[in-house]
Image (cartoon, rainbow over all chains, first blue to last red; front, side):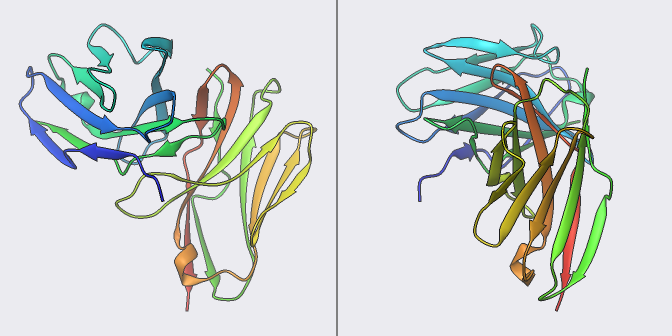
Length: 112
Length: 111
């Protein structure tokens, strides 16, 4: 069964540092997403990406965040100058010809 | 913004019984809804979806009901099994590709 893979599974970083979360979407999918889930809270949409550009972003996705598809298989989320409140599970997802998306297992980001 | 909420944060059922998980949504413009299942340590997994032009959709052991009049969505799981223990999220879509998730209901199946 195809799956979305994310690395690392857990990332610990110091406040103020930059982190890059990596994702390999399902190979024939064209739409890519990042969501986050703060512990005990809802899964929140961050950004969607299609045709090598951002198609939508939420209010959360400010200048601190950026996404990139550096090659034909990876999709990354960069968080600059991390804050304590950035600690969360970050989920990558991808979709092809369905409106619903396949999610990865997540990266737990801990900012200390 | 609009929110999707769940009535019950936890639900415990006996193995073999049917489970009903409820969800209230607040945006009448939502035209597409999804139920996701999230097991511990894993990402959300698609279960079933429904468009707003339908009021019921059935899958394997699962049924989603949509009541647009009261903006209510439910997930029914027949003959609940221990492997069904997870957190269940509903999500709604009313603009572009953004999905708005509910808080989640934790389902525990008692053997």
